[in-house]
Image (tube, rainbow, N blue to C red):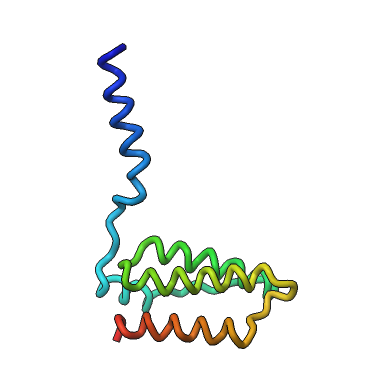
Length: 109
């Protein structure tokens, strides 16, 4: 039983750090991935905003950290949009999304 304990601790440690240790794409590969992304949401505005938020989150989890940070911000904005009564973006939210797109553009020229 005492020999099993270190193995259990090791496995638990790997499970806890597994997500943090997931390798990310390079910036170049991230930009190529984004250029190939063909995601199209469906449904009403609110459903589309929710789907877009989830898609942005999935993408942010895959790409290089430099590109992931603005995509994560976009996911957060779209989550707020999806939580609104109509699922429509405000002028301020459109501005926030445009700013984040410009940040991505700085890396993906």
